[in-house]
Image 1: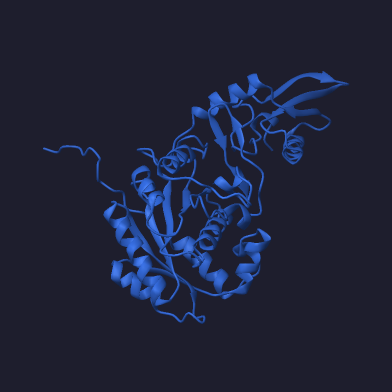
Image 2: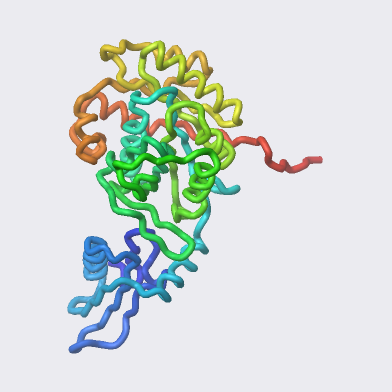
Length: 340
């Protein structure tokens, strides 16, 4: 059992003592007194913090949990920045995948959410950046709506089902359209990568792109040059031909196209479109995921289907998660060593 000082803070995973959020001092009525300071005022968060510390503290300890004051939040932010690294920074070991499609409605976001949840359930440290600014859906797919907690200079991703999440949907009302153009999009995406504490230990970042070949893909190609591109299509010829443009644009932007996923395979849409697209782009067909009403219902409930009962679609999504090839590192724009 870890002492209270080593209990991880729920939003960051860092030990409480490292962030200056715990004190074990004195005694109250003969028992150790543990004072814990949380980064959020949310009652559910404070209860979880209390339970975690109570399980680690010596029997009979008196435990006080309260929201951290401004001074402690500043100190916690300084400690977090010492371990902070953008997933796109030089030297980062995080595997980054941009999940895109040529047109909307092909299940790109559902595939992203389920792959993320499957990887997290397998023990990997996973995050999802919802870059579909106009049609964000990751908050609903993971069943979370609370805004992210902020400390000075950093935002902390929302956590659900073991996955770290960031989306514009956490900041706006669902009924309000997001009216952003190129410069605002670029700045927001820059901040989501650089000013969010994803954690130095992050294994995989999945980026849910908007459909098509617009500003978001161009921006992320520059910010995440080592990312792999996963193209999602349905078997339809129309979906496949538009998705081919996304794959070609990614390649021209120096991104590696990792592979193709055929979603809604074997349904009224037919099959084979994914294989044809993969052949056209010269990349592997990573998965054929059958259309499954259960996957749709699970998304509506806010729980990724891979965490529920088995089905052919669920098994295909789990297999996709564990078989994603590591993106090849781009050499474009990098300084290379000289050999003699």
